[in-house]
Length: 160
Image (cartoon, rainbow, N blue to C red; front, top):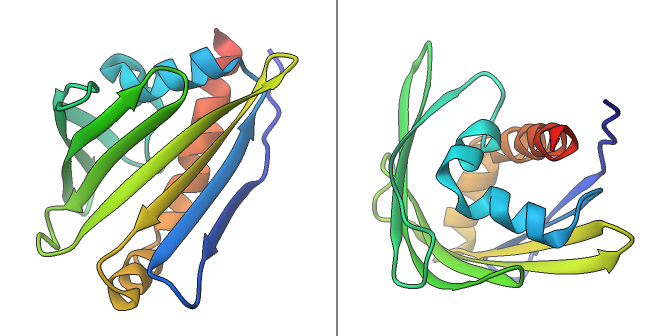
């Protein structure tokens, strides 16, 4: 099995409370989308490699919600939110909250694009309540989790 790791671009706009994450995959858009909405697949790739994941709830449908816990030797990290719009193979709009900072909710929009030839791209935009809240998320080490998670997604997609 051969796995190509693509570059993950993470951009924090200095003038707006946003982070944009862009990533291409050597897999059809339907497979990439499926890996974002099926709990048994999400559990296999989302987050840093050194964390385990338990899903309490994951109803990836318009009006649905999710709650999951990442664990490592230092403790537990609980995340939750609501799915506002789920359009198969096109778009997911959801809220995202880290239980450790319950007063900070971001709105995430992920767009899935078919690039042809069995390739696809994701562009995710996270809108935070303030530049300070955005900067706190970036400083938390989220970049490591995003990059390692997408590397694990590459591996999952390559395995079929």
